[in-house]
Length: 181
Image 1 (cartoon, rainbow, N blue to C red):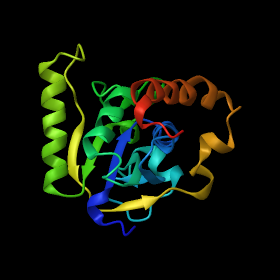
Image 2 (cartoon, rainbow, N blue to C red):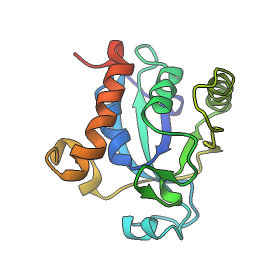
Image 3 (tube, rainbow, N blue to C red):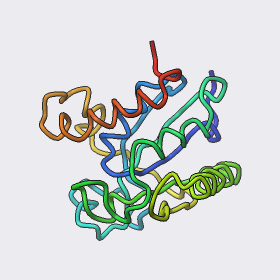
Image 4 (cartoon, rainbow, N blue to C red):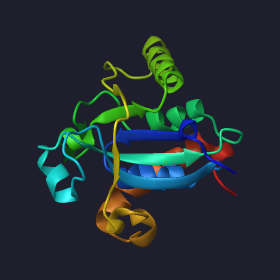
């Protein structure tokens, strides 16, 4: 299958290891790459992003088959596995690199994201206002190789056990029909 730009999604909701691990299990997700986006420094390193000075967020870029999983489905999982009401923070991970952000690839993705946030707000799913940033994707930089498939390669690592595994379980519960068999 030939994947077009419209069949990609770029999302940041805390540590990219969590998002990567959750999305890798969903049917229709063909590729997940951890990386950096939303900043101003070209080709940033993890060490640079961690300082907060580059402006980048830790993100995942998903390549997906829209005949199996929709962009709205991807957002449903996104808004389930992280707290979109905490600016620059997810749990113990604090800093602008951990902000909630959707980097849209086209106007339709922007509209679907805005509709999702409007729905969650009107349904009062969260007690506090959603602070997820919605911005056009300008550049995506893949993270260093040791960040790719991190949970899969390091399941016994304490951060993976305490933080990543519960998010994967939450995604499985929420998107059971979309989890790969």
